[in-house]
Image (cartoon, rainbow, N blue to C red; front, side):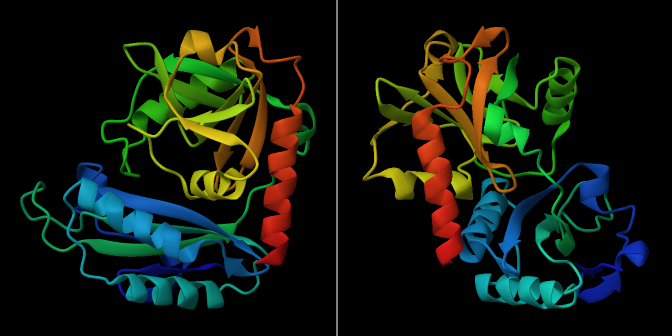
Amino acid sequence: MNTYYVDGKFIHADKAVIPVDDLAVLRGVGVFDLMRTHKGKPCFLKEHVERLRNSAIKIDLKIEWSSDELEQIILQTLDLNQHIDEANIRVIITGGSSPDFMTVHKPRLLVLITKIPPIPAVWYEKGVKVITVLSQRDIPEAKSLSYIPATIALKKAKSQDAIEALYVDKQGFVTEGTTSNLFAFINNELITADKNVLKGVTRKAIISMTEKMFTLKLETLRIEKLLKADEVFITGTNKRVVPVIKIDDTVIGDGTPGKHTKRIIEALDKSEQKS
């Protein structure tokens, strides 16, 4: 049985609950972050905690836990779930219980430990299809609990045999995926958006790792330019680096994972093996 941390207590998963007057339930007020383990240890723990705190700042949610306290609670919860070989760690800060159903009084902290879901090997071997949707996060820099646009977009993607949906704004710029950051190779330049996106921890690692491998360009691409890219890939905590071979009905490159993308996948693998 998995053990969760809920509002100051360690509780078995089947007993873990929060009150119905929590603003996460009533208004979708809250932020979260997701990290995974490698060899039983959290990957980029400090970076994920920093992003969690930044998300809270972006939605004006004041929290009482220091970064050190958050890290210790995460590690303690993980230690109580040693039966899980490799785990997802989902850290959630809710708006907490609210007498007037609107005002934040005392945020609530949750830490959920679960098994990492399997990712099909064919994604990396053959590449994947994604679609585009006209949408955008309300507060792109915050990883908030409000995921209605993402849920709708992913349902549409699944209906078209795609694994992800990319957000396109009203000006025709492609910003990011519902649960991923977007990268493209155009004329040997590695391009990714730097504004109006959730800056993923894996994204940050890729940028740092590849700065000596490729010329990096921070630019939000228009859909027309993206569809003409030589290579495209998406990144995320669980999916890591996934080659994209088709966007909507347009084949990217020659329709197979590109050589630069493969090189980045190999480099990330080596980096994790050393950690």
